[in-house]
Image (cartoon, rainbow, N blue to C red; front, top):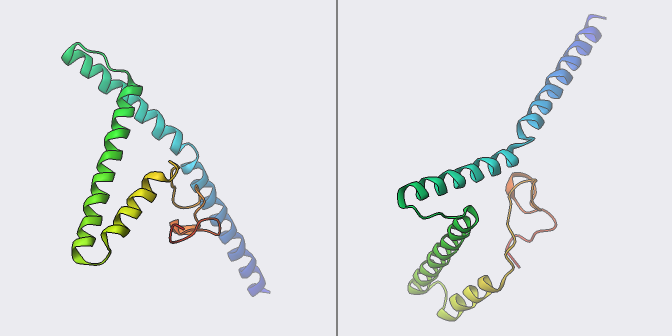
Length: 136
């Protein structure tokens, strides 16, 4: 009789702890993306204000964000070209393969890739059934 009471108490305690943990995780992750976007927008606004105070020239936050996106894209392209060139120099790929990869990369659609459960990926950021592993 004591064993069955002990089992029931342990089971209920485990259920309460699990429910509390899941509720905490849901509440913690609820508005995280919205808060990040709000903070990023506020930061861009403040940077534009400081720039205008220092130079007397106003910058729109959208123009500043576009400039950041363009600079990020150019840096990523430059990094990829340097990496592919080093692979060509090591003899791991040919120049034609490197050129083909760069052409493929520039022709692909501009779709954001997200890890984990938010995108099409599976658990721990690994691809799920809708996303191929090797990018084909």
